[in-house]
Length: 71
Image 1 (cartoon, rainbow, N blue to C red):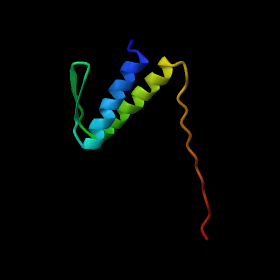
Image 2 (cartoon, rainbow, N blue to C red):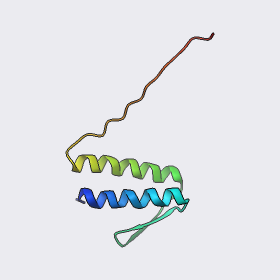
Image 3 (cartoon, one colour):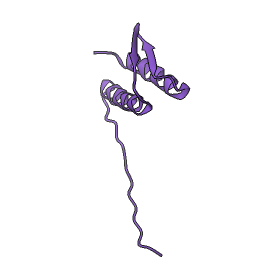
């Protein structure tokens, strides 16, 4: 299993490539081609969960839903 530092390096590489618009990411001597930005986003979310698990914490996401009846 990868260490938290290695996982952060992967996440940083993905984030940098996502912001530049490139779908090919290289880290640790490996190259991965992604089909879309959404796929890169899912990979980043998965790495965030793995980093949290490696650090012994849970990743908590909150969704707030509000509704209103018409005026």
